Length: 329
Ligand code: ADP
Ligand code: TRP
Image (cartoon, rainbow, N blue to C red; front, side, top):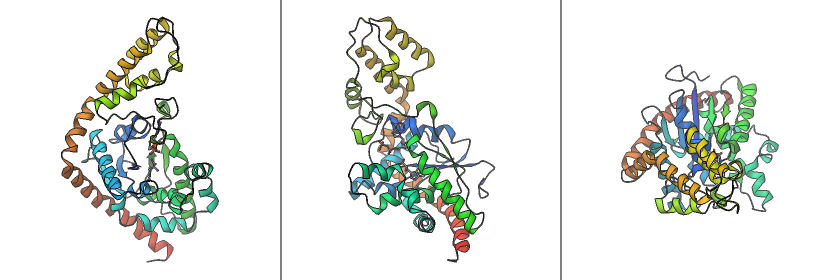
């Protein structure tokens, strides 16, 4: 448990890379947990712009995407009075701690990480940034002595790496770092995309609640279904439309759609229309706030500036301890 907290709450930290338009998978797999948990923990939520450099090479895109994620954080209801929202690169010591940690991270540990292994398997030449990515992520987590890290399922391994590194550091230099726990949203572990694979920007199969209505509609109508004729009964549990509807609707609404599928005389077109309406309803307030904040980017930038001050205060304290322990200070 962190000792430096301003209250007795445990500390939560998480982040998202600004590497493209955020979609329903990102929202239900990761971000929704940030808002659900923001009052239970002393929360730190950041934009991993250094991490995004492993894929985003255009500076203007990186800048724009960074503000986009900040805008989305505020739109989904993260309260900047309660939650410290900041940009990874605004924290002075994040790369310093990353270096210290890298000197005690075994190569084998990083070689086993999916982010790196998957690229190699696809025959893509990986750079050192991608290889070292989990060490920087460990630095993000350990710098704030975070107790809990809510992430999507595919990030779990990286949090385990952070745990291993923290334990090793503490064994070598004394009990300074907090060993973090991860937390995933089991009910929405993997959100399917419009083609039924995992929804991911790399598969071009996403639905983004932050797109314009026309694009959302186009994506919903493209969701792949089987060829069961309209009049015949259908299996809701094998349908991508139903899987997405389940994320958004109330238990009664879900049961009603289930019965419609089983009863026959209800086509996939009907289900898609209901899904579209549900997306627009569920994200109604969030979208309104998002489009409003898009016109007020100075405010968003100010929130990040304030967040950076607080994040640096905590990071400086940890680094002071770390630098003394390792013999740099
Ligand atoms: P993408 O696969 O689109 O590149 P990222 O890898 O940037 O998404 O994921 C950002 C966060 O969102 C991570 O915590 C990840 O686990 C979560 N996430 C992404 N896609 C999904 C999905 N389809 N289902 C559940 N969680 C997801
Ligand atoms: N790697 C995470 C992702 O791709 C983003 C991230 C970077 C992160 N540092 C973190 C998440 C620290 C949680 C904690 O989504």
